[in-house]
Image 1 (cartoon, rainbow, N blue to C red):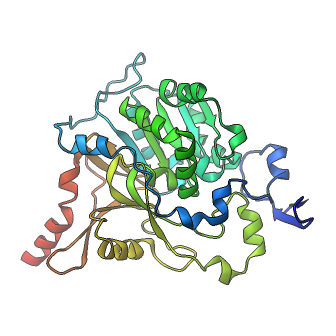
Image 2: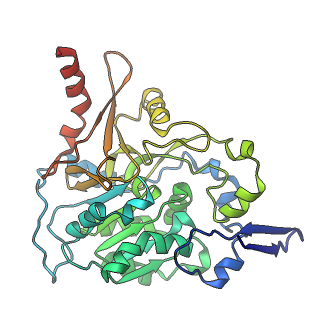
Amino acid sequence: TCHVMMPLEETGEVISAPIPTHWEEPIPMEEILDLPAPASAPHLESLEKYVDTDFVIADDFAQELASSEAATSCCDERDADSSTASAVVPKIVASGNERGMQLKPIVDKIVELSGVDLPKVLYIGTASFDRTDKFLMNTKMFREMGCEIRRLDVSEQDTVPSAEDMREMVVEWPHVILCSGGNTLHALIRWKEIGLDMLMKEAGMEGKVLCGGSAGAGCWFSSLHTDSLRPDNTKNKEHVLNELSEEELSDWNYTKISALGFIDAMCVPHYNARGTNGEMRSEHAEKILLEDPSTTMVIGVDNNAAFMVLGNDVMAVSGDGKATCHVIVPDERTGEAMSAPLPTDLEELIPLEDVFKLPLSEANSVASD
């Protein structure tokens, strides 16, 4: 491949990074030249200090939904003059990985919830440090459809728009808000610092579709299972991968952090995947469920699957015909975790409260057999 080398002004040290060869579209030269450089946000120097930060801002919204009689069906009729398919909120499509944003069954659900044929999409790439390669990957399907797309770059302070402009972009303009994967903890810190979290809450209450893969999925839940402390979960990932040994790259742990709180459960993106630390996401999530009393329900989302939410009703969407979502709850009788996959062949959404009963129903069914 090709490589970029640059001096660090603070130390005079020369740092380098290989240029990825898997990119399908060109990247601006200024970003290529900046590829080895780390992000400048101060909190990145000691990110672990923010693990216990409370990022929940929509818990009142979630509680109100839980006690309300929300509509149970998704409106199939498209109204070009309306920014919503129905009055039911929130509207969320949470994919297990960013590739889900390129899979037609998942993208079709996002468009369906938007209520228009060509939704206006606001892309927020904070978790991926506003990198253009991630923007191009996440928005490819929407750009090919002919959707109008705007970017909101807030990972660095010098790109944050005024409060008035940011509100116009987040609350007034889009039908869909698409958040990238990447470092969820970094994204949540930045959103809280600049007030973007509250604008997202307002947008969600007004019926904008909230979606994304990986970090862009977990951020909508009350908590999530994350690899934000992974050594290479950084802006200059290529440089870090080039400099650290395999042992150093695998020396990290998953952690649970709070998130925005639209859905009262812990989300586990990449549920069926193994991290570079050698541990399965699903297995570690079960440990958290059993050891942390505040974690009562878990939604695991496989790579290439999505968890779709409309008000109090949900559906598992498979992007490849195999992947699905899972619900995991503690078994009070045995002290173990119970799990059940969600069917992906349902034509209608089902109540969220019924989904959380699936593991017990499956366990009782097995016991009776």
